[in-house]
Image (cartoon, rainbow, N blue to C red; front, side, top):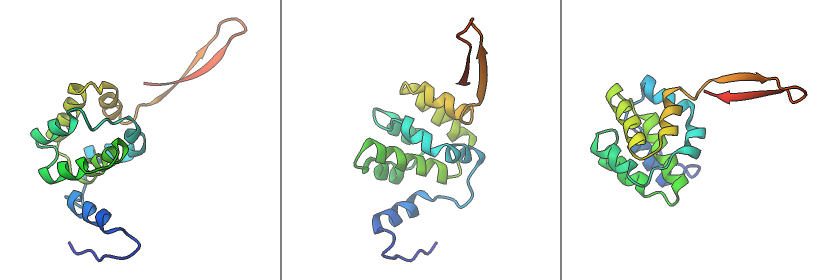
Length: 139
């Protein structure tokens, strides 16, 4: 893969993309993460054991691990991890290991969100006298 450096793209960003873009073809599991990257970046907590668990289970590489850890803030690390996960062609085993790692690090809500492909919307009509309300729940 040959990429040319331009002034429009910072060199560290270019290097990071080269390292994380393991495959031009992403798997269905990577696509699930890619579809919900924005929301997941707000939910993900990459610190406190998640990265170590993903590395030990072969979901991310040593190189990915170091680049994610180099992020300046938790939000930057989260974005970097999500980029790696959505760019790589995750196997079913790696996907299941990701879900297991999230559960192991007490991020069950994130695992459930991914498992349900972002959840689905359900309209609930609650009628209680004059306090009738229409609520939307994510299930």
